[in-house]
Every structure is written in C-alpha cells, then in structure tokens.
Image (cartoon, rainbow, N blue to C red; front, top):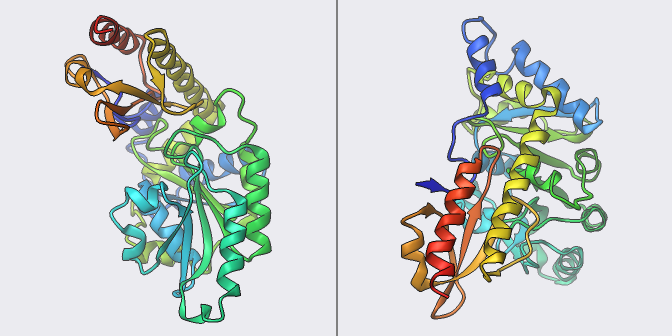
Amino acid sequence: MYSFACDYLEGCHAEVLRALCETNMEQAPGYGEDRFTNTAREEIREACADPEASVWFVNGGTQTNQLIIDTGLQPYEGVLAAETGHINVHEAGAIEFSGHKVLTLPSHDGKVAAADVEAYARHFYGDANHEHMVFPGMVYISHPTEYGTLYSARELEELSGVCHENHLKLFLDGARLGYGLMARGADVTLPLVDQLCDVFYIGGTKVGALSGEAVVFPKGKEPAHFLTRIKQHGALSAKGRLVGVQFAALFRDDLYFRISRHAIEKAMEIRRIFEDAGCRLYIDSPTNQQFVVLKKSVLQELGKYVGYEFWEETDEDHAVVRFASSWATTEDGIDQLRHAVAVCIKSSG
C-alpha cells in the first residue's frame, strides 16, 4: 500500500546515498570542520547569493527551531507565531521547554500578517505594565506553512519591514523550503529569503536527505559563540560530515530544486484526481501538501488502499485529510491513489 501520509517516508535520494557511500571511508575532522561540510556551505552561500552567510548544520527540524529561537532571544523574550504554527501545535512544548513562551497571533490560512505583528508590538509597548510581561523578540513563520500556503514576496517584505521597525528578528522555518520555492507562481526566491530574514533554515529531512537541516544567518550575523550554543543544546554532531555530505550532494547541479519541482508536479496530479472526483479542497495549496474534505464514511475504506493523514473535522460527517507528495513520489503511487479514489469515492457518489 502506497502512503501519502507525510513527505519523509523514504530514506534519501540516490545521489545523496551515493555520496555518503563514496566518502564513507575517507577520514575527516569532526564537528563540521570537514571538507564536505565546507563544500556544502559554499554551495549554499552561492545559492543564497550571499558570500558572507554563516551556515551551520543540525539533524532535525524541532532541534533546529528550538536552537534558533533559544539562542536568538533574551531570557525574558518570547516568539510570535501563528496559532497554527508548528512550534505552537506540533513540537510538544519544545520552545517553552527552553524557557521561551510562544506568543500566538491569528492565522491567515496558516500565515502571519504584518499588520498583526505591528498591532501586537504597539499594544505591548503601549501597556504601562509591559515590564512585567514576556517581551516579543522574534517572529516565527514557515514557508510553506502548515497548510501548504505560501508567502508572496510582498508579504515577506512587509513582514520583514514591520519586524525590523519593532526590533524583532524574523525567523523562517524552511523544513519544506524547496517545495515552497518550486511551487508554481511562487515569487519568493532563496536570495530574497536571505535578504529579508534574520535567520532561516533549508530543510533536508523532507527534501531528499536522510536527515539534516542547514541553518543560515545572512551576512554572517549569527549569535555569539554559536558553535558552543549548538553543543549546549546537544545538537553538535561529532560526525558532522554526515549532514555536510548530504547537503553538498543536494546543492550540486541544482538537485535540491529539481527534486522539489518533482514533488510539486506530483502534488498537482493528486489535486486533479480529487477535483475530477468532485471533492472539495479545504485550502488552495500550490505546494506538496494537498488538503481534501472527504466524507468520514469513506475514510476507513480509503485507508485500505492508500495512506493519508487525518487533519481535522469540519462537521459531523466530513473531515479534512492531507495527502503529501515528496521528492520520491512515484507514478505507481499516483496510480494507486487514482484507483483508490475511483473505488472509494467516485463509486460512493
């Protein structure tokens, strides 16, 4: 049975695995001081059009979010995020565990609006008792969002402007960044992200790597003693080469972008299958996550044919279900989904 439950079900792209095997027996320094990691850094700097960028590698998304937020904030500061944001909903309180509160904002199809950030800062500093409160110190966004939606270049520019006017750092979670950059109609580029954000990361775990995320501080503006801070968080891998090799492979010959485009093409096929069956899309997502409103009565039967992720109920009889494509989605998987929809949805009316 083929599964569309998430976008990290497979191991890694063949080119990444080949690079790991070919370099396996070469001795290399630890802690990311090896030649592979240095090559990956240079490749990412070039892709970001930022030769001064500081690039670091860690193993997973939650670890990366916690590390960036904790090292980027003062002890009395919190991070602003959409109420649907990953750090607020699906990270088991990892941010609060490090001593920083997640300060929620309204979600606009998963996105944070610049006007809401500006209003929060204005109301906070307008309160005579704000010294007794958690200060906002950072704004967290993800691109794509938890609902597969994207920021436009204009929205990102407005957010960046409001953040910097109010002395807030702008942090972009790029766990699925490749899928956002390659979505049809997207006008946000990697150099633009580098230009407008204070820190962001390029996701590898969900985009072709076995594991790993690349943290980028534009223009080299990283927190002091960042290597030490990484180690304090238990995130400094002795065999840092393992992530470095993978990102060097991903950013060689635009592989990262090519495989991300593949995921988008497959996502659009998924979308057409459900549209042709008369199903309603919950949200207009141009990325690899497609959200479909289905009758609850068909879900159990559908699950016999393909894997999916239950998202949320919409009413007593319907629920939102997520189908995620990835760099590895096959045509055979798409065919299995087409058959499942024909059997379970079209036949049921």
